[in-house]
Length: 117
Image (cartoon, rainbow, N blue to C red; front, side, top):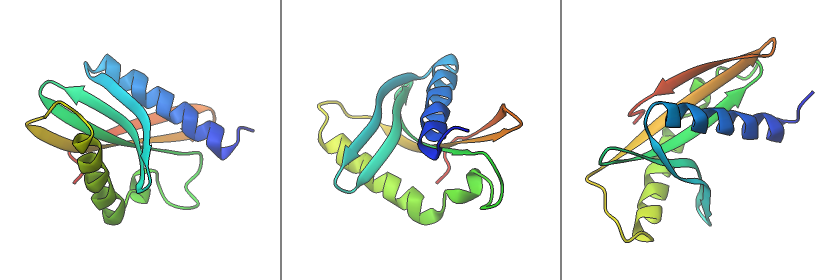
């Protein structure tokens, strides 16, 4: 049985592979500062896309998507601003996406919510 950390890392890899297959360019993964972490930072056309990845193997604590609450989305907006402050580039738009992965009986389902907040 994989650990929770292994499940999360595998989910993030599946999400990154999916985003690339959708034409996005991954800029950075697991960017951290003292205020928190962004799972995936990507670019889609002129937009910067900050992606929160949630992976679940059961529904005892709700679905993966339900676990991304408004406070988390607000934190991601703040983290995106912190990341942008360190970059020489600017982006005309910044979007927060959520990728919710759920694994049951070994199979994964993926839900991509664009513009979650």
